Length: 546
Ligand code: VG1
Ligand code: CO
Image 1 (cartoon, protein in one colour):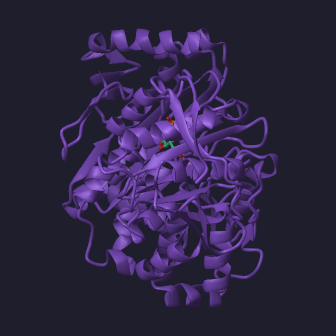
Image 2 (image 1 turned 30 degrees about the vertical axis):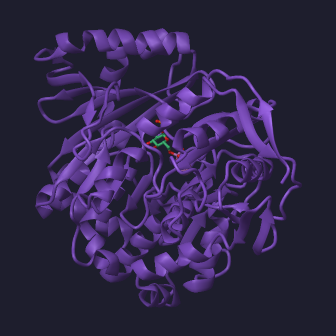
């Protein structure tokens, strides 16, 4: 044994955000930075009997610093007494695959090395998050405990052992701990085979159906190649940018209309494929674009909920659904039609875990292009594409036809999100604080010809364990159901990012073909005026419009 105890000191600012700890790579490269956090995680979650017999799942999205971080984690895990670490080959593991493996192998938990949709490379971001035995992101109680440990840490338990070969499948031993390098795709693929009718999907592609899947040089490349091209017979070239790169090819692995513009343009052009899809850095998000039609993520969630029964895993129907608070009410309309409950949670996947574990919901999602089900405890980009493919195969219709019929049945929730990125924290915080202070006074008043029915700072009480999460976003709801929501992002690493979510319900099919920004123009102007965004931030327009 070569275990060593290194003296260390707390490092400020290690509070996990919406999804784990995210910082600039240079910050993570500082001495003890990563080790301090990993040791704090282990200190926070260590069972009374220690980690003997416990398995840790480890992998990341392939971004710069992924491999170095993985080696450090292995050494710290060995010194902290883990029995086994399961590492994805080459340190690669998508977030949903990590969740799948934790559950399938009965692991204690996992560490996922990713800053998800944030840019990568030496000047980009790195991140790390802990998932528990249910495969889901640590809940607030756990992340709070981890943070408390980062502020009190005095020592790191590690070893001087050399790096493990993460390129070769199989088992080695590090100071008594087994390190098993496993195929990053195999467990996940096996689960997808259980959920979906792969024969039906093979027939779809054999019939000439065309998919364009943009992996954005991020982690889904290997999964998409294996599943869409090799398993389902989609032609080579279906998967684009399918090789994970440490800097994502210099692009931002965020599947939105700005960063996945090439795909969007292709889908809007003559001769477009039948379905366009993209995923993010760690593979948990999905962007869905039909030929000539972008499907807003909130709508995609609703359409998946309405049609999920067409895939084998969901044939018996859904127990319930959930959406994050800023996500549009489109899925609520489906839940009402199906006669099932619909829960409204704060932003971030960790809030769905209890509802999924308790069997209260089967499907859930967020406006930020995250959809998932009870098959794992993370949102899942490739899964969402497989569910869309299953629905398209079963219905034999185009995405546009499915969307139009959906809106005709349930009405359309026009929806947009405007992001103001990297604004000064000194502008963002007073903007939110001043608006929060005015909310109570807005109730019952008229704004831009609309009556304010409700205005509050969203607070969530988990129906399963009663835990309360306050200050989850400012929302202004009008009497006609329209909404404006304001939040500060919890995933950025520089300044503050203001997200403004705007929504209006339109029941009349004669008005379902409008351009979204035009359909929402009045509310967009109102949202700016109410919070004085332009005036306070000096920004004339949002950086990203979804
Ligand atoms: C964003 C999204 C949120 C999502 C989170 C993690 O958080 O809005 O819906 O759960 O990213 O997604 P925020 O706090 O920046 O708004 V991922 O794919 O980056 O892990
Ligand atoms: Co992600």
